[in-house]
Image (cartoon, rainbow, N blue to C red):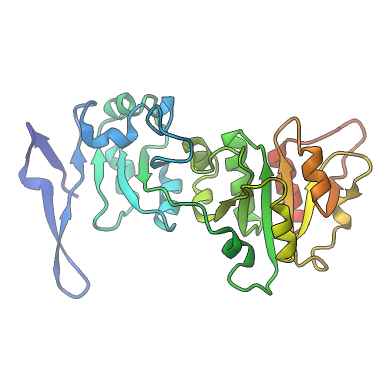
Length: 297
């Protein structure tokens, strides 16, 4: 792989390499651009990520999507999100086998760290264009409205890392989509994407604007809503039969307060995870994984 060095705005002779495609056609492929100046505006997508992944004043849920690490970037490549650029150290970027047309910047680890604002142990970072949330009705119906379907519904979950962990478990354990109330954290925020190992990029999500009233839209689409709570009067989660309830939506609240009374009243079932005496609750990410596995048909 050759590299493109730019000096005083002039591209060197290595800035375009020729490759032969499978049909014998030549394709001009831009070689990775070497960044030596941390202030280079071409890597502004990645600037000062420690402070956040969007410029100050940009509304929540907008701006580019930032993806850290080789494994997560590989999942980005398989997702519907369009890659804007990849930036990293030379050896790690070469591992990715990026398709033609992806803009690639490489730098030594010191320049990379100065640009992004911290030491990146995962070797590479990518930026992608954000996609809007899915259409709620289409998400509820799914590809086949008569097929079994599992959803995770989150209320007031404002911790990005918990959200990312839940998304990772959701993909692993058969959840088809996430639904968020208006107070939830941004699932495409950098820390959410990082903790999910990029899996959140493959998980459709939508927002329920009228909370908890929009749970009736789930009921109308044939879902049994199951609100998780440690309350002793709730049914045992293992008593909820995933075969009898072909479409289920698990409701999870924020770490600490859990689901609001209003959300619990709006759900069809209140269920608890059976635990040993003396343990009153689990962290929301652990509770989510257990409930996803329990209700998997």
